[in-house]
Amino acid sequence: DQLKEMIEHDPSLDKDLIATIKQFRDDEQNHLDLGLAHGAENAPLYNLLTKVINFGCRNAIWISEKI
Image 1 (cartoon, rainbow, N blue to C red):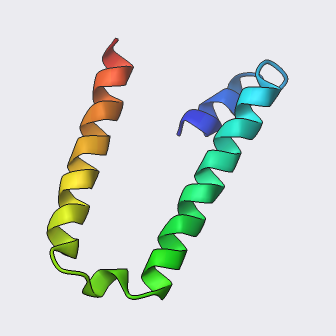
Image 2 (cartoon, rainbow, N blue to C red; image 1 turned 120 degrees about the vertical axis):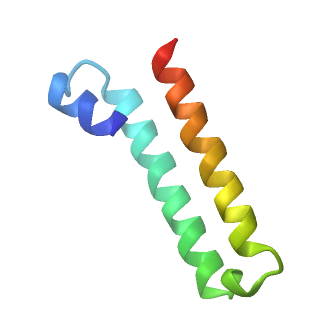
Image 3 (spheres, one colour; image 1 turned 180 degrees about the vertical axis):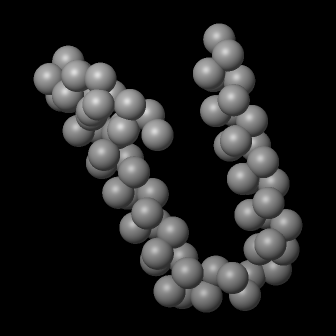
């Protein structure tokens, strides 16, 4: 969402930052894909850890939007 907002607002404003965020996004997607391809879903406590991480990330984003 952050990337979309920046590009819609003014893509020329933060070209370096936009490129960095795109790289982070792509790296994280590749990391997820690699983990799933190697059976990450079969790891002990995978579902619990996924929920905890998701909860933490969503709350961190919410907090960062408020400050």
